[in-house]
Image (tube, rainbow, N blue to C red):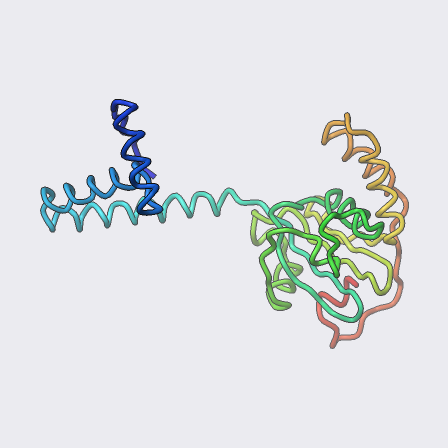
Amino acid sequence: MSDIDITLYLNKYRVRALSDALGNQTAETVEDKLAEAFDTLYQEYVPDEQRASIEATIESEYAAEQAKMEAARRFAVYHIRENGDDYYFTSDHFRSPMQAAYRYRLYERGGLSAAPETFADAFIETNPVNLEYFNEVCSNIHSDNRISALLEFDLDEGRVSVYDGMDNEWQTYSLRDFSVAAYKAFRSDYRSEEGRREIFNSSLAGKELNFSEEPSNDITVSDMKM
């Protein structure tokens, strides 16, 4: 936004006295009152037509800024199945398989202070999505360059499927191997992110699960990965 700072040099005794007086009468601060004074002057001296044009400009700039932020956003898409229930969501905080694996390890071992009731609850600030959206992304992860990875955790079956868009294929691992790889990667606090990723990937190399069964036609894209 095109905001600017305005600095006023006011005597500290006067400001303190006004602040104390406001504190005894209202929750407003000196800054609040100054902002109100500016708004009054703005309404009084700037013509209606010009104010309308300015508001349109502000809204346009805000929309452009939000669009830019959204385009720069990176997130992973999740499907978690636990106790027969399915959860679909995106996460901006846990965007890689390694981060998801370490989150699972902490959840599995009761190492999260929030003590979530489900694994889905172990992810903070998520955005729920539906099965249709998840299947659409599964069909073509490259349709949205903001997506960093797809992950399907099946806690009921004890496995996880990962698709990061790099190998253009899904890889499925046992949750135990996934957890152990996270442990090895995060065992030291002094490793770089790149170093951890190398250890994580190396630990999972050759641990992929292979399924020879052909899925029936009435199974969803999501079910095929689980």
